Length: 365
Ligand SMILES: Cc1ncc(COP(=O)(O)O)c(C=O)c1O
Image 1 (tube, rainbow, N blue to C red):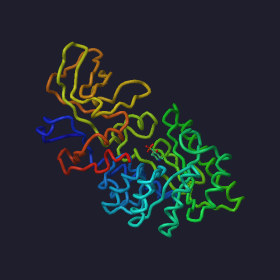
Image 2: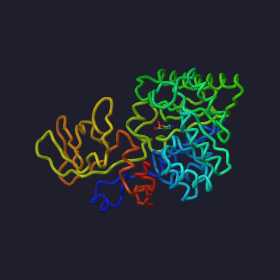
Image 3: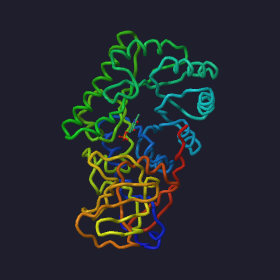
Image 4: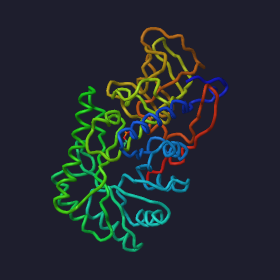
């Protein structure tokens, strides 16, 4: 990413977005989803920004996904009103907030537990409103959900609640990021959708008909033409991409829309450089092959460790970098990086076009 106004780079670290690349990424997946006839409900956990969410909706997304109720509140406050909260709502206060938000927006909520469904059912009873849920099924990530077979009886019980409708079955193929080959990722994607569909069929035999099969992960998104049964997809990272997505084969360096600019603040030995971006900027998510991001244009630099404000870079061989020089880094995992900054600097053709407030940052309740 070129930055014409060099003065901006005297106040680092900054998290910068190449707006052209962002828009290309958004239209790439919107067009692919349209071509296949699959609805797109992107996960906003990556950008946490109504500005980016509106771009996704303008390009054809049917709504968005958020991780937390607090993120959904921010989005509704900013005019976005079709949201899947992909996280169970638990506890009195959150149920009250959810009930309030439900009066202002079309909300769906994910869960995998009968007790949680019962509490939501009470909210539905009070508001005299049907609450639409997406049920998590475990298709291999081993996070939320039971296996397809074990899901059936549990979801059948949930389906009997008076004010709950199971609108979708959902999964997240986060385990695809550990795969080493395209073939393995394709297999994970197809198996994921097949398991969701088997769950759907077993429930249909018991008289419970579920319209949506909703999958989500940027790693598997590019195979959507080959993935059967899916009605909806919820990728998040594709808007920005990062080192994880590159390693999964889902993007190249030129598709990474966000970079962190950081300044060299010390060069104490030939083989060590220190920069002004540590874990409070780059986040700590480890990359499977080591390092804390890709330093663009410097293949021989490895960000070997981070303390809160310092990044330590090991130099393999020689470098022409000096104290005061600015480097550009593609983070390992973009979502936590965005969560750590108030504003993204939006550049186009080297010029600062706009600041993008990350209004949903830190909304982890
Ligand atoms: C439930 C759920 N859906 C969708 C996604 C989006 O996947 P990705 O970040 O691979 O784009 C995530 C990411 O964590 C998720 O947890």
